[in-house]
Length: 150
Image (cartoon, rainbow, N blue to C red; front, side, top):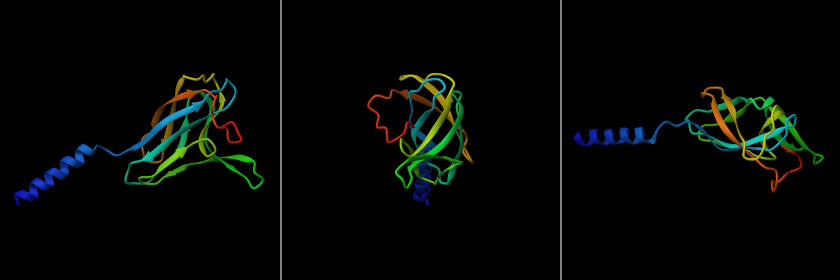
């Protein structure tokens, strides 16, 4: 009996030390652009929860409109962007927002985004609390540009 109690206590302590699981975002960055232009934000997002969730919106003070888009090549080989109403996040899944795929569009910048600047971007979820990211702006030199600016 004593052995069972010690085992249960050990399991409880290990679970408590593991900390709460959450949705995490890594490496948020944006492309440099001037006032009135568009830019894009990229990052990796991981759902560490045991339940599925979804990104249902994005917001930021740096642009007139902020939307999630998906870029892909059409049958004619032309890059197209399509607005996404939501992005599913299965339990344990990681989704990458990267050039040429999913990305957050910043439409109609209200200020310049210069290399080294940072700004806030908030992700809104169906179930999880909002996450506000500190996004770092990177310069355009040396970036792979797969057929379009964002």
